[in-house]
Length: 341
Ligand SMILES: *[C@@H]1O[C@H](CO)[C@@H](O)[C@H](O)[C@H]1NC(C)=O
Ligand SMILES: *[C@@H]1O[C@H](CO)[C@@H](O)[C@H](O)[C@H]1NC(C)=O
Image (tube, rainbow, N blue to C red; front, side, top):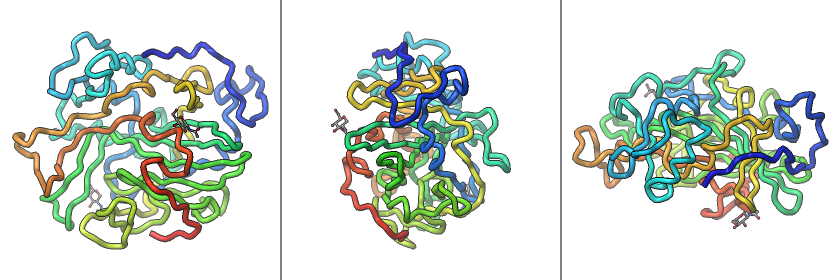
C-alpha cells in the first residue's frame, strides 16, 4: 500500500506552533525530543559504522526468499519508492534487499561512515527519530540507528565460530516522555533489550542527554560500558560464551543528521516533520539485507542451529512502535532504577 503525505497539518504533540516559514526544517518536532536525544559511543575497535539508509537501496537489489530477482520492481529503488516492493512476494514480507556483491564478499560500503570528532556523519543520514503519541500524555520518541552490516559475535571468543552476521542492521533506543518530561528509556539488544528509568541512565557531560554504548559489530545498545554476555536474551551477565563488547570509543551524535517523523498508531501513517524526508521506506515490509545463506553454501556454518550468515532484519515499523510499556509487548517489562548489567 502507498501512503502519500499530502497533509501538512501535523498533530500537535504538546509542542508550540512553530512559524512555518521560520525553521521549516524541524517544524513541530517537540523540543524535548531533541533536548533528551541520546548520544552514542561506538566501540573503539568498531569497523562497521553507521551507514547511509538510502545507500542500502543503492547497493542492493530485491530478491524473493528463493533468491529470484523481483521482476517489475522499480529501478532505481529509493527511500521514496521502497514500499512499492510490498506489491511483490507475500506483500513484501518475502523480499530481501540483497547486496550486489554477496555477504561473503564484505564490500567496503558495508563499513559505513566513521563519525568525525564532533560526532557527525557528514552528509550521510544513518539515523531517524519517530515520535508516537499515546494515551495519558505519553509521547514515545524512538531513536533509530542504521548500520549496513552486523558482525556477529565469536562463540567462546573463537573466530571460526562467529555467528549472526547479516547485511542491514536496525537498532533503536526509545525515551518515554510524560507531559514532555523523560521518564524511562529502552535499549535494544539483539532480539530483546533493557529498560531503565531516565534518572538512572548516564547523562552526557552531566546534562540531559542519555549515553548509549554500542556493541562492537552487533551494535546492541547498552547503558553501561564493558562486556555483556547475551547468551540468554534479556539477561546480561558479565561473562559468558557470547559476549558483546562496548567502550567509550567513537563519539556519535545521531541527532545531527536524523530524519524526523511522527507515527500515527491508529492509521499506521508516518509523516515527515519537515514535509520532505522520505517516508516510503518506512512502509517497506521486507528485509534490509540478504537472506540467510543456504547451508549448502561454502562458508555457511551451523553452530548448534545458529548460523554464521543470517537474514537481514525488517525495518523500524516492526519494532512495536505502538507498545504500551517501555519494553516491546513481546517481553515482560521491568524498568530498572539502578544501572546493573
Ligand atoms: C571488534 O570487531 C573488530 C572487527 O571484527 C575486531 O577486529 C575487534 O577485535 C573487535 N573488538 C573486540 C573488543 O572484540
Ligand atoms: C497501537 O495500535 C495497536 C494496533 O492497533 C494496538 O494494539 C495498541 O494497543 C496501540 N497502542 C496504544 C499505546 O494505544
